[in-house]
Length: 327
Image (cartoon, rainbow, N blue to C red; front, side):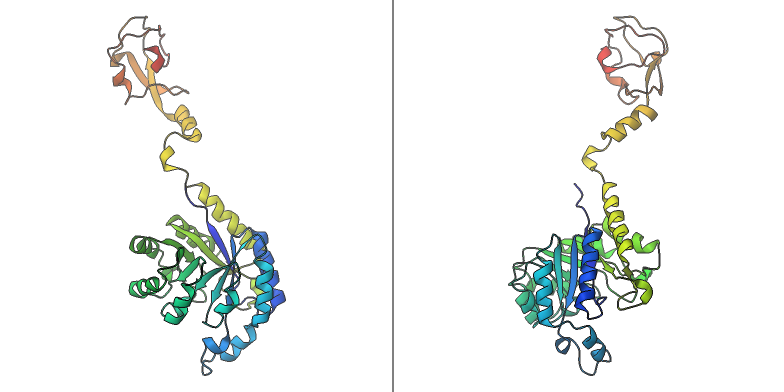
């Protein structure tokens, strides 16, 4: 059975540093039917150099630890998974005793102190591998070897990420190389009405069962992280779209025998039809039959050889469909 898509509503910095706006986004994610909400938690001084041109800007979106504790207390009690993307070692203490999963940002894939600490947590770990090579991923996984449940999350944000940079082929490579569950963080331009749904759909069909997508309250305002973010109604449509795609996979073990396919066989396949009257006790030969659409499932040309040269126990009139129980 194909695993249903696990859809992560990524809030990132769309809250603009406002806990009230963050709550609106989280509530919209819940209403959308998403599987999880993802919060990004950091302490600016542990993440950026003061010489970084973005240092002051990040101060505007940094939410204090006390606010995060209240938010996590509130939303881990709701009927939705919470994923926390922790960007620095100190911020890990915020979530240690909360019922939430952890995403390791790709920036921390080589942070040994950070990864060793995370390996002690009894939580599901999403390891972001965007911009990383196979050795970097392998080295990180060695440090996380005690973790029971690790998901590799491909994809990266380039404000927005171009189609040609999506590199969806890495999904199969990662599955084959590491034998772990795979996810995909989609960052396609949200204004591209076709590809914003198409790219994550392809990722899902390739085996990425965890799909991350940004959400914002109003993309037209061009706030933070708006490039690849969907508005709440669009996000709800996206969730429904991806879940509908999962239905198309079906069950390969039931190939040719589903109710729909059996109905199709009745309508379109050709079966043996008598081209003459055949009396009880007569033997049947190939030249006694045409193969035509009959509206019912009978004996196909592939199976007719099982019945040739055998006597029938029921008389058949010309144009009657030959059935297995006639022998």
